[in-house]
Length: 126
Image (cartoon, rainbow, N blue to C red; front, side):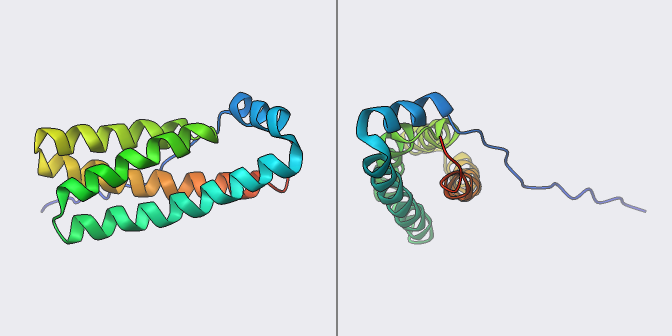
């Protein structure tokens, strides 16, 4: 009799509080909140585009899209998201499509978790 082990696909993320604090100090509360809100919207759109490029097998567009996530994620302290987006670009550069698929969907999981974390953080004072 075979045993099947089910792997849980959950990602724990931490936001770089120092990065967010610096953003709030530099731009003030309303300016920083505007930047964070725009970044959240843009990240959500680009993550969706990355998935679409994967389904369309447009790996160059996927690479470009993942690359564009890095600066946005770094700006608002999403270090894990930026790191995995870099991994996606490396897998695309290497033409390693199994790794590309795996890292892309890890990127999506981390992206979703990170977006929720930032959204929840907006309800707290920084």
